[in-house]
Image (cartoon, rainbow, N blue to C red; front, side, top):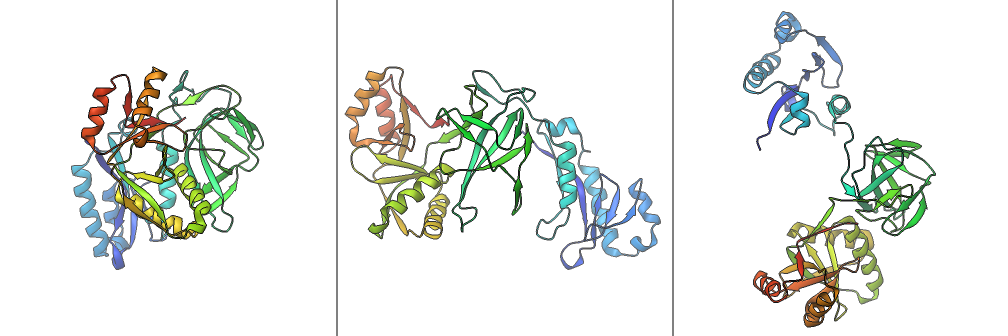
Length: 364
C-alpha cells in the first residue's frame, strides 16, 4: 500500500543557515524559536515582504516548497485517517522546534477512540464502565527507586484516581491510587482520564502486557500477540552468588517484552528467545546496568520455538511426555516445544496432527 506525503511545516534553510520555518496550516512564517514574524493568505503574498525576499535562504525555501506542493497531494483528513496519507512536519524535539505545531496537529487531526477488539464483544468508547488494557510495561524508569510502570490505554468510561479495577487475568481487584500522566521526562498525578488516554500505573509485578482492567466485567482485550523467537540462547551467569538477582532481572524484562524467557521441564537452565541479535545486546546491557548482574549467552541445539496447544488434553500430555527433553515453559507456564530446526518442527506436526504449533500467542 502506497503512503503519500504532504508538507505541513517547511524549513527555511538548514544547519547553520536555519532561519525558521513555514507553518502551512496556520499560514505563518516562524522564527527559529517559533515566534511568528509574518502571516499570509497565499504563498505569493510573501513576495511582497521586503525583509523576507532579501534573504536568499528564504527564497530557496520557497522554491523547494513550490516543487513539493506541485508534486505532492494536499492534506485530506479522511485519507489521513484511512492510513494513506502522512503529513510531514519539520522539527526538532531537542531544540524545541515545531513541537507546539506537532501537538496542535495531533489534537486537531488525531482520530477519535475506536472500538477495541475484545472477548466476548468489542469495547465501545461510549460505554459508561471503565475498561483498559496494558500495552507496555517499563521497569526502572527511575533507577533510584526501582519503579515499574504499566502503561494502560483506556478503552471506555471515565477513570478517576483511587477507583478499584479488576485485573481479569488474575481475578483480583486493585486500587489505582497513584496513576500518572507522562510527558517526556515529566510526570503528574492523573486525577481523571477518559477513553483514548494513556495512564501509567506503578505496580510490583501485578500487571503484565495484555492484562485487561475493568470495573468488574469479565472482558479480555485481544490482538496483543507474543511472537515466537528466532534466536534461542542459554543464559550463563558469571557470578553464581547472584542467581536470584538474575531471575528477577529476566522476569522483569520478559514482562516488558525485551525477551522471551523459558525454563526447561528437565533441567534448570534459563533460556531466552529474541527476534533479533540487537535484543540480546539490549538484554545483556540492561541486566548488567540496572541489576548489577553480568551475564553471557551460549548457543543451544535449538533454532525453533513453538507454543503448543490442543483441544485434546490427553494428546497434549502424550506429546509432552514423548518430547520431555525438548519442552519448556514460558513465564505464564504455557508449554513450548523447542526444535532443532524447522524440519524437526514439521516432523512433529506430522506425527501429532492434533497438536497446534503456534508462532504467535495471545497475551491475556
